[in-house]
Length: 380
Image 1 (cartoon, rainbow, N blue to C red):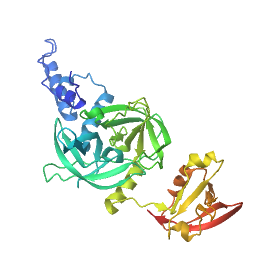
Image 2 (image 1 turned 90 degrees about the vertical axis):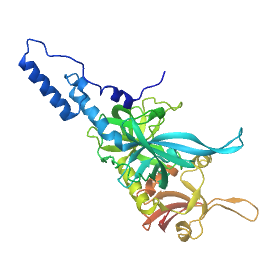
Image 3 (image 1 turned 90 degrees about the horizontal axis):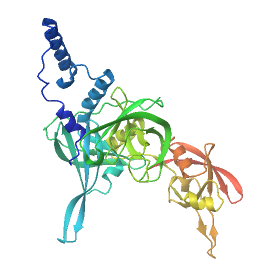
Image 4 (image 1 turned 180 degrees about the horizontal axis):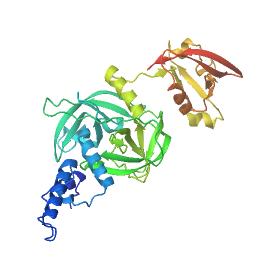
């Protein structure tokens, strides 16, 4: 049995209305009423089959929201070149799929980094009803720390792109109605609804392990293929970019996450302008949290210091060995501008508050002594 998508089912209800006449007792009043209802149907775009008032006002708003925003959501296929052992040739094979949103009329598409990761070619399907055009996309840039990527297509004048209406993720409330549009399991555009079930969540970026703060939690179904699609509020504005589901099996279990649109906008604007996102760096590498915690340590143990980097210029010392090959522990960073740093997530969270070129105060444990150093942040 072939699964039908939301797009095809919407097409089904666009058929001709049933051949019915108003009851004879209505006379001219019934005919006038029918004409008024059909006029209303044409005005608000409700299918003729439902022009008899069977849809609630809320249902009508949801249908309009889906129709208005579907042209702004694309289907992305990740193509990888792999070796075919049977033919001994290299072949292009789909290795994943996801969703994306049209950012502007110049062809910029925004999606998740993990949707296009490892691709030798990226194909984008722009929907126009059941029929859709496919285009090859070029990578503009990515922000792995926030799982945001920008690709670009050239429609060569075949069609005008409809950018997504962007909202703000500031001031969102638990219980607020939200809608997710995407292509779960490779199906055509699908709408799922729910509420914001939590705000201010923190998840790790799958690519770098760096924490993403302020993430939106929702119970709207977010399944494989929804990644990179928009999370909309009741006005139809995008408040987030769906990025992950919390489930051991990978299927939706009632908890999905979306990157706040304010974070997405910041990353995208830098990528389009510079080709990358510029973030402050210290110029160090450090011992993983779990290993340092096992050694009963607290803070960030510096392993290496990049030559001529910000930390090196500030005199921060890395871990080394003496002439007898005994390990000499490097500096342990305890706080940044007074904010305690218990682990790497704390470090990244604090760094995100500053910009390259700013000076910060680091409290260090050097041997048995505490010291303070001033460091001028570099850029990534």
